[in-house]
Length: 164
Image 1 (cartoon, rainbow, N blue to C red):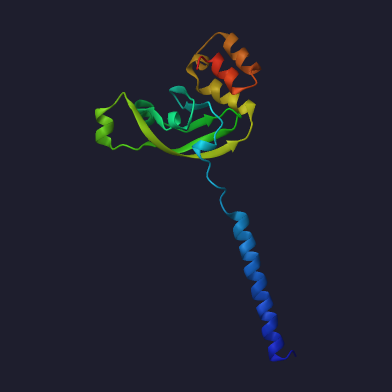
Image 2: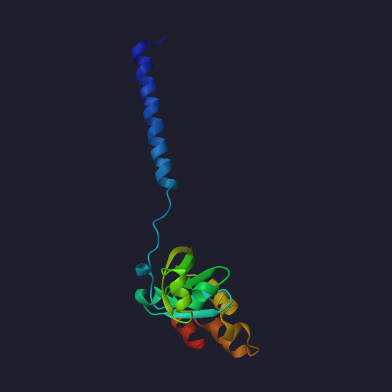
């Protein structure tokens, strides 16, 4: 049998190891830092579920959107930046109250949102999203714009094809 002092030292070592393990697991499981609009590569393309896409050339431009788009979308709003990184815009909403929005139904409003990266430098997913959500391509019977989009290798080239 171990002396009482030796047992206490052994318990202290186990407790210390448990604390260290907990700290390491906690650090490994912490959420990644949020992506900021300032960190995006501009221009970016914001893709709404039904109403198409909008090009934004800088952070200030991205923080202003059409009231009808912000209030009328149903589904997930996506963003593609110039590095072809794909983001989801969660919590997209106007910073103004309902009364202001009713008084300015066709204007532009400041918006807030959270960016969540879901793909990095993913040209295939970028093409697929544009084909799904851009009305000029989605509703077109002509194969020429679609074929051009499939050959484009940068967001700037894709923007040119869809006229943005």
